[in-house]
Image (tube, rainbow, N blue to C red; front, side, top):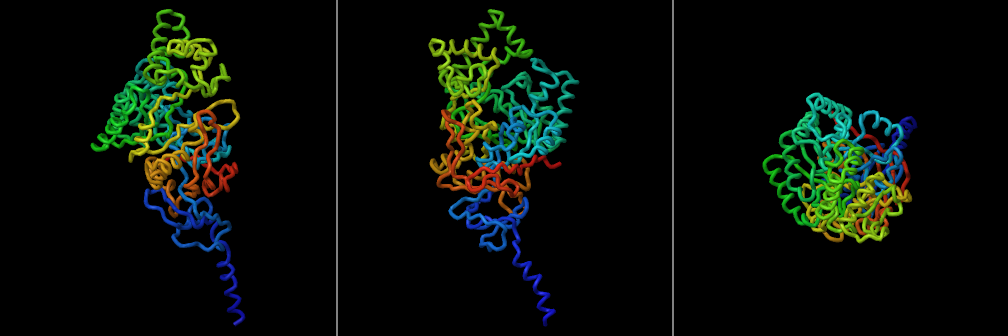
Length: 523
């Protein structure tokens, strides 16, 4: 009998040992599928979710327990449009992670590192705060092969661009991005983009597009993207979808109808959106693209020709009145302007007043030329309508993307508040306060829906076997704090953010744990 009792001791001790690294207990689980919430526990071992239970998991079975009663437990948020260019200098990704973002899709608007493989390997060795994935950028490829010239590629140049797309896809890119509003992409014809997109499609990639026009040419821009998707047989994302300029306000009704019609005939098109009524891009977006044919030096040379300078100025005035300027230079705000950093956070109208000039589009155009000649800058354009923003967010095929750049407080710039507040703003303002969509739908738009678009099989949902990217937040208090006047403020209401099972935000405090990974598209 003594021998038999001794046999039971190891089994009894094993049963008493913690089985899980972490249990999140008593939370209201929204699993990322859009299904109704339920109360339950989640067990995590290593970097994976190993159990999602509707009954309580004993605390003794976990090395650590997080009490999530009165909290929402959701998958980590996926940012479908992220400017993570500063990753090498801001590897902790605090401005993203504090929003609950556990995966950022980089390489948007046609701009990406080239080649991708060594860049991604360097980030892995460095250690990063959240997971990152990449698109390969058309503009970066075109610049590499052709420079900034307005002409069609030769057959050899097109082959070289195709080879670079194929290389990016082999390196693990999730697709190709275009920035047809920017240079040199704006010089591309649709046939070139279709041919390059076919290469990405052959590897299972997607196509995301900053449309050629988002203002007066918006319908044509949407139509072009749909045509590219149809002819290249590639899934499409109309990225940061919007209607720019007062003359286009309300036209999201038509563009979303175009999206629905395309889907109705089998073209796989979706959109992403950010929850603000201002855009952010370079000062040069106000200048006609033809002025840069041949590069910045050509722009400088054209300005020395009085006739060409007059044409450039007229083009800027047109854009101020009809596009990013919204007809009022007080809508044009400086974000990062090295030439005159004292203007960061202020407007083009403020600059005119400094010069004792009336704040007219004509005077604004002269200042735009001066600013571009002195290095350009990053700007915020207050030119969107709230009704369009709400309409796009609520659309069933719209996901959430910040279009935000990795940022940190105190660097002397005045970034768009989306860099600090996008995801909490959706859940706090649009879901809780305005009741635009249900909480389950809001979470789905930033988790499961985005994961499905990227064909991720093991992220974006709270299910057994998934990677443990998890956010625990208070639905009653989650909110963005960043404003256009004071953007560098972190959100509130997010208690925990787990990246691959490691707490990046723990009890509301950022840990700089660097548990993120570079995610490559599955072959």
